[in-house]
Image (cartoon, rainbow, N blue to C red):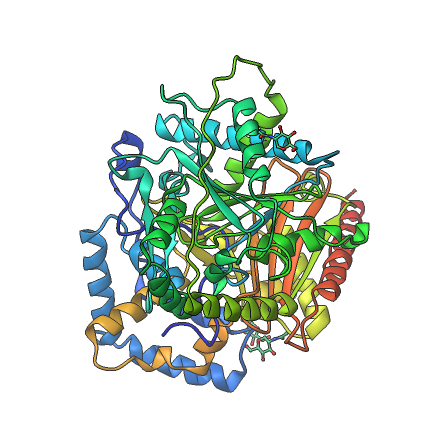
Length: 603
Ligand SMILES: *[C@@H]1O[C@H](CO)[C@@H](O)[C@H](O)[C@H]1NC(C)=O
Ligand SMILES: *[C@@H]1O[C@H](CO)[C@@H](O)[C@H](O)[C@H]1NC(C)=O
Ligand SMILES: *[C@@H]1O[C@H](CO)[C@@H](O)[C@H](O)[C@H]1NC(C)=O
């Protein structure tokens, strides 16, 4: 098992490929993408030792040096595993993707809520009444359908990074897909590529699920007015909230949910209802209002609501956490989404958000004659005593998780991308160094730091890790954006090390010592798990910490301010999201002063 007690997955910029995915997205573009390379063996271990320098003691490092030397004996285990990896790479479109999908996501047994699924907080809305809420939800649905139109017609513009085209596959995995729990390992199904593409979404209100067909019989999408009317019907027939929160089952540990799932779908009605949710294009959660909170804490509370729904008393049962995309629109103006991480990294999700927000702004409501539409059917569930018991324990576990999650959203308004850019510095690298500084000031040491790096320059590429902590970062030297480059060019060390390790599991009788080493455990224990999720929309993405004693940090550098979401667990005495937030603000301020001084000195 590659996880150290918690989870081994990285956060945002990763994407998955399920077994059901059609890899040849016939377009020219995809076929011409380069293949992900296997980095040279000795290069990876040189970098591995360098990376360990700021993290472990001199004795530990000496020990690891010996193990590395042994592993790299010419003609030894290292060379053998490397050859196997290279063979794998020549036989597959991407040597890593399937392995990554399995080990980072589908094998992980932690709940997807909080521990895996990122949330996105959208700007707060003011709804005068529930019509306002539903009108907003209707526009949002229309916006997502507009995005889907680009997917269906394969007219989505190809993205570029540094002049290089990126793999667009992830965009094709986020609609009409769903994770399915298994007792040992999950799967992901993508219904968009089935024979009959789904034409419905799922709407959940007051814990009750409805099937809402969003296409007319001639294949045209419903208009905003039509969707609005259908939402009102749904609302009107789900007024009582005394229902069992069946959706909360999806927030459980995966083994527990896997068992409960098999039990749930023994009943034919339940099975059909579950299938309808899984097949739907996406889910819309019309949330009940949450308790009032101070303006200052508002963003943090919404981030928590996106991650877990607020607990069993609130909206945690108003979800289907297995669903890849869930948009959340609260009666109190809370808006955002939560997505199941296995099929995609943050960037496609953020791109979708930007598209939808822009659509909603430019969209004018055209009143067209209305053909009456049938009532959207409510999904029925038969709650047996056993299912009821599973729901009760899911509620308890969810409430523990809710109490444990410590969230702090920092709206840093002093400056944004503009300042580092004016000094020819990468805003991302600049913020990463601020996080290093903040962490060092709080803990008087540095830690293994994970920053997601996209591998989408390569066919079916997901992510590797930028390790922002290095001797250099410790010394705060000039090379602020250097660590980024090897990662996105497929020369980072983390996925290569993982590949060698998984290859060892496949072909060796015992695990090479290098992977059993304390230093390796330290290197893999990411106290700081970070990701930049840059959007045009003034939003912020958030995700839970990767280790029980660490922080999850996601930031969106806007032109003149920075939105930062920080998470930690209350059960860890050493971590504190708000304190870390304050340290980050101070670090950003101090670093700007430093830039000012440097500029003055140059004049
Ligand atoms: C929903 O209920 C409200 C209040 O009773 C009513 O005014 C409205 O017409 C109903 N909407 C639909 C679509 O049935
Ligand atoms: C990194 O820092 C350690 C401790 O200060 C030092 O011993 C080592 O030589 C440094 N390595 C490099 C490559 O600068
Ligand atoms: C960070 O990681 C190390 C282990 O690598 C651990 O000892 C430490 O307590 C962790 N947490 C914090 C908040 O430093």
